[in-house]
Amino acid sequence: MSGQKKSIRSRIQTYGSNLSSMIIPNLGAFIAWGILTAIAVPTQMELFTNFISPMLNYLLPLLIGFTGGRLLHDFRGGVVGAVATMGVIVAADIPMFIGAMIMGPLGGLAIKKFDQIFEGKIKSGFELLVNNFSAGIIGAILALFGSIAIGPLVSAFTKVLGAGVDFLVSHGLLPLVSIFIEPGKVMFLNNAINQGILNPIASSQIEETGKSILYLLEANPGPGLGILLAFMLFGKGATKASAYGAGIIHFIGGIHEIYFPYVLMKPLLIVAAILGGMTGIFTLTIFDAGLVSVASPGSIISILLMTASDSYIGVILSVLFATAVSFAVASVILKFDKKGDNEDLAEASKKMEAIKGKKSSVVSGLSNSGQIENNNAAMDFGNVKHIIFACDAGLGSSAMGASLVKKKLKAAGHGEITVKNIAISNLPTEADIIFTHKELTDRAKAKQPDAYHVSIDNFLNSPSYDEVVEKIKNAGSSDSEHKINEILTEDNIKLSGEARDKEQAIAEAGRILVERGYVSEDYVEKMFEREKTVSTYMGNLLAIPHGTDNAKEEVYKSGLAIVIYDDPIDWDGNEVRLVIGIAGKGNEHLELLSSIATSCSELENVEQLMKIKNKKDVIAFFSEEE
Image 1: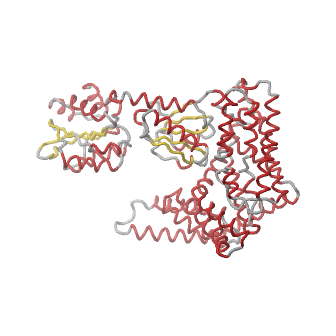
Image 2 (image 1 turned 180 degrees about the vertical axis):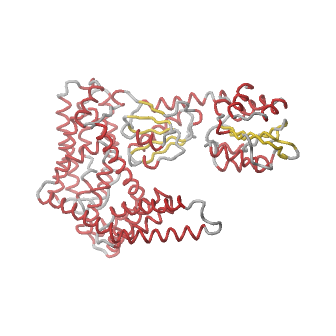
Image 3 (image 1 turned 45 degrees about the vertical axis):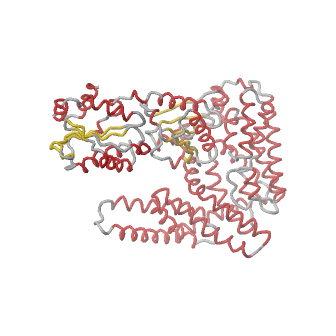
């Protein structure tokens, strides 16, 4: 049963992440529309009112549809996704955000499947014609389908949800939604709540009233701020010390994830969050207050910028009252907590599992714990190029963690390593190390199983940061100790090369280096540049093509590509039967050349290598000579 619950929660998280991946890249457009709306509603100036409906009904849904399609099949998927979205737009008289979230990915998926089916089957010269017409035809069909089927369904669904909200508001029951919203936030379901339910309904209300209370149901920073203030006064040890910085990050920076670990540490605090959220919503309903657009991140600054002109008092009081109630309840809980800051973390985890019906996360900042989980025990920290921080939406907590590690790496003399934060649904294939919260690590592993995964509890204060930086620092100090047999695999070896001249041989070795992930495509061009300057023929039937000195940035990690030829290749008037493409990281370049020279210093050794018909024996040859 617990496995089923975990699966359901994971699916909801994935759903919310996918939705946020379509919304977050377009937040700038939402903010622009919100600013224009904030000016248009009170002034009724035609210059500003002319923007409201076209942007809401056309621009924003089309951007969402394009982004959703592009996530599945790049720009081509985006185009078809946007065309398909137009179908639901023309079929409804409400903003089609939900329709765009359906049709955009559907368009991207449809054109992706088409391209997979016809890959390699289109005659040369007809590619552009087929690509354009296929995108146009598929887009037109999906647009008609969206107009006839999806649009009316989404309209009906949205109206039902809207009627439900109206019912709750008219009967004074809207504050009760905090019972679902606040626990959902702590369980990292906030994106599904916001993008899948609240924001689409809110956009419909904007056209009618010019504002919506729904934009602030989940974004109100008051409940979290109250809990952090309680820890500042009644917390102990690390909890009290870290709460001050967390409060600033939460309230000013808008990164609400920062207070989730405090609630996870003492699950009873969810009561404080719920009551605080209910108070904030109740205040908004009394003052009929609301925002004009999405406030993201949930900073008090962005909230005030998106506040409707007649709602400042209500919005400010909702934040203050939510903070006060949350603080009062959390203070009582902390004050009468007999275990205090010395509570056993394992026991706290079990208690939270009983409350939530799932495995808990424990605060590393409080317990000084962190866990490194990797799927590749042979991780080479000396060749780390890309470190990724992934969270559900790619903002907030992951941005904070990335900033901290970037500073630590720079201080350790490794500022050249790229550190980025990104949504977990958009994990890049080149990621070497991936940091995620424990709740999201399994999803990250499923998307990038070959990366080195670091699972943490607290993005603000994880000892795993220093552990990883130290491993990179130590590995960098011993780069010259790498040996050929540590980077040479069977996949790097080709026993019967296909090239017939020098240029083809360089390209063949370079292609292996690229396909194995050692270098970029540009590195192969640098190999040709080097050959034009100085011949890489070494004697003894051997050539070692490699990049120029300025090609180091194109090397991801040290690697070899060995190609053996049955017939000699003319290499500037010399016979070559052994081509070793090489890519060296830092000083490893010289180390690898030295090792190869030792192995091939005698012609009889190279001739012996030519007779080998097994890749394992080739690896053994270089290892023994070494």
